[in-house]
Length: 44
Image (cartoon, rainbow, N blue to C red; front, side):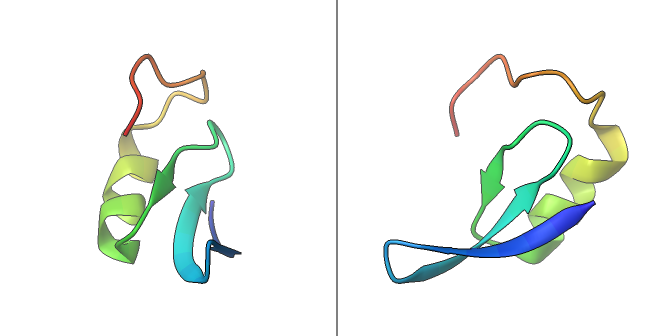
């Protein structure tokens, strides 16, 4: 599930499974469909 969060005076969308942050909700939703729930192996 993707949740909206506020950081640094900006709106972000966070994947609840792995914690990865996205600045576009559509990117977060796309990621969610492929997320396996593990920590990301890269920094975005």
